[in-house]
Length: 281
Image 1 (cartoon, helix red, strand yellow):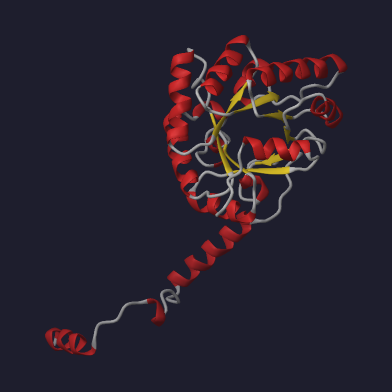
Image 2: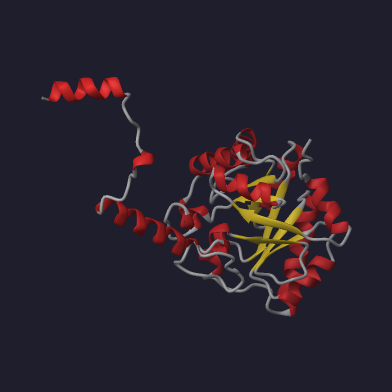
């Protein structure tokens, strides 16, 4: 029987000084392959707004869309922990509606949710989620849903005071009950200091080598999304070229009569074929 990755698994990895992997997935087959590959956490990231739906920012994706992708990913996973990003404004209006949205994601197959920020309100939302039996992954540093108030895609924690501020926020998230914290676009030294002063594991999203986990958008990792490439995204494949080449070859084969071939079509039985030929005379 496959042992499911849980919050206890993730904490044990941190305590043992080991590392865990996190990749995004937005569909059944990708999730299935990532799970089979041994990825520890599969995140239905709101990054799907750009890489799967073609929006300009994560602000445009909503609860209904995240629900569909969560259902698809969850069906493909046996071992990994499935975490759903709570999209923009899905948990900001009031705690009651936040809990409804969060708990629905669990009903759709998520094992945990990810929530950005650390205001008093957000801390209360996290506490209520945990009290309701829903594990929460925090998210500090550059928080995409606060893009407009941050003023752009800016690195966070670039000074001593800014690093301490993120650490203070992280400790508040820890008290609220998060099981891990994503640090996005934070200098490596700052992330190391924060990580070493927390009990829960941190997950690097462009925050260097010293966090317990590393997360990447799978479309960046696979070389499929080419609109832009973050500094911290390593391309392990070239899916863009693979898709283009396969599609061009298919197009050529169709237009030149090479597809389908004889062994790729269905045939009538001989007696049926004879009747058809006689009828056409």
